[in-house]
Image 1 (cartoon, rainbow, N blue to C red):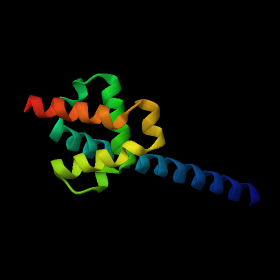
Image 2 (image 1 turned 60 degrees about the vertical axis):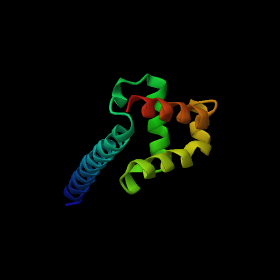
Image 3 (image 1 turned 30 degrees about the horizontal axis):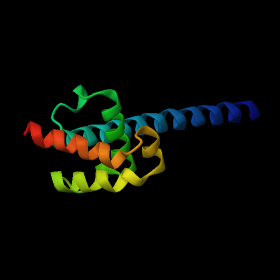
Length: 111
């Protein structure tokens, strides 16, 4: 009886772990698609950008919780600007505000 309880406990633990992993993966992929769509409003070829630029944009989007903000170009830009003061962002770019402004100027030039 005791052995059966242990096996059931292990099975439940494994089931909960697998389900949590699947739900977390689904949520992460969903958020990534949303952020990609939002960044594509400003930079249609965001995936073709240099890796350092993409890394900065991804981190800014993460720090400002871009997927939780209202849709639109102006709210996307405001969100990204708000995140330039984060410590993690400063590890990716020495001057994240200037770097973002350069990327935004390039995006305006491509329109």
